[in-house]
Structures are given as structure tokens and as C-alpha cells.
Amino acid sequence: MAKNLSGDLQVASANRLSDGVVVWLDDAGDWTTRLDRAAIARDKRSGEILLLRAQAEAFAVIDPFLVAVTEDDDGTIEPLSLREKIRASGLTFDVIAADAVRYA
Image (cartoon, rainbow, N blue to C red):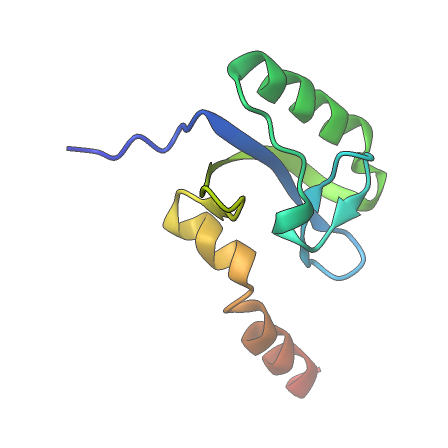
């Protein structure tokens, strides 16, 4: 049985144009590298509005989209899908960037 990765909670994510780093839209409409500062949409309509805000603030990022997340009792936010967990942790970016510099 497939997992339900749609989630009730969502955050807006994109990659920064200048360096490809994963960023999240915060409540002020700024892009941050910290998932814990991301604006959270708590229902479908809020998600639609958040995505529109992200697209409006997309001058420094590429292709904003919504990411389903969970929030613990202590407020910790974590993506639901493995792909987004990897993007949020940055596990592969440093390795790829190091290789790119080495072969440049």
C-alpha cells in the first residue's frame, strides 16, 4: 500500500538560483535555508495561498513547490518523503559541489 505523502501541513520550497541551495519560504516572504523557519500551511486553502506567495517571491529561486511535512509536539518540522528529507538535510549537495569544483 502506498504511503499518503500529501500531508495536511505543507511548506514552500525551491532552489536558490545563485548556488542551487534548497530554500524555504518564511512568514515574512523571504527565502531561508532553515526549514524550522518555514511558513507552514495547515490546510488545503492555506497551501494554495502559500504556493502563490512563493511563486510571487520567485525572483531569486527556481520553480517553487509545496512539500508535505509533519510537525512534532515540540514544533520540529520534517518532510514526509525521503526525497524531501534528503533535500532538507543537504546530504548530497556538498559532495556534488565538491566534485564540481574539483573538475572545473
